[in-house]
Image (tube, rainbow, N blue to C red; front, side, top):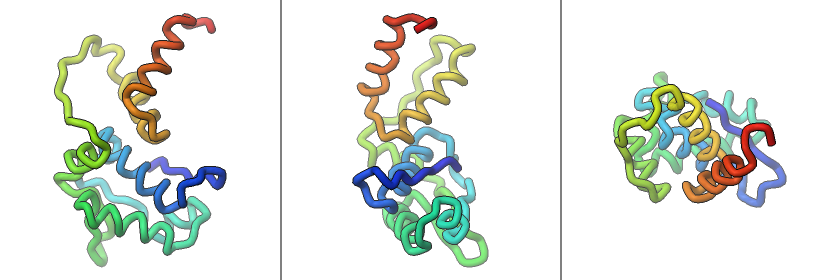
Length: 137
């Protein structure tokens, strides 16, 4: 799981964690059943207090995205992706791929854009700007 806390971000660290986990679930990078790090491990990896990591997990549990059970840890729920998409104001899509060769790069870009908290329009604007400049820019 790739989550980062930016001390310069005005959002509190728990909210940064919560949003990034939500984005990872929505993008499918954290599928149903995926196990998350323990609170202590996440807090240590991110350099935050355990209570900060616990609050992020607790809030995601409260909306049904995560499930925590003693001795079994914290995992992504079966309905997590739909709930994450709803919380992010997005609808699930099942559009056919325009280019199967491009799908892996597109999924990687979407995951990165979601982790940054970009909207679809902001992500598309970045693509359009780079498209116009060309690959050598």
